[in-house]
Length: 71
Image (tube, rainbow, N blue to C red; front, side, top):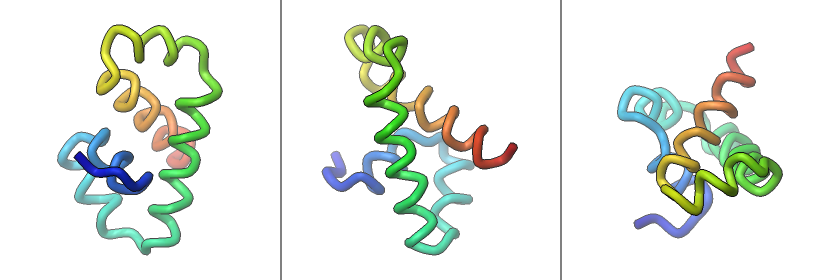
């Protein structure tokens, strides 16, 4: 399991998203990973989901970050 923020963020993505984000510059990957970590820390709903399924909470946070970036 990856221990750095980018690696953990990438692991939370589905394979298609992982390939797309993997093609982006490292700086952009770092920005997305930082936004992902902030999302995980700030959202109380994700805290509850994290207690039930940490991978699901991480995937939901990643989905939210990518949705905001696309909008």
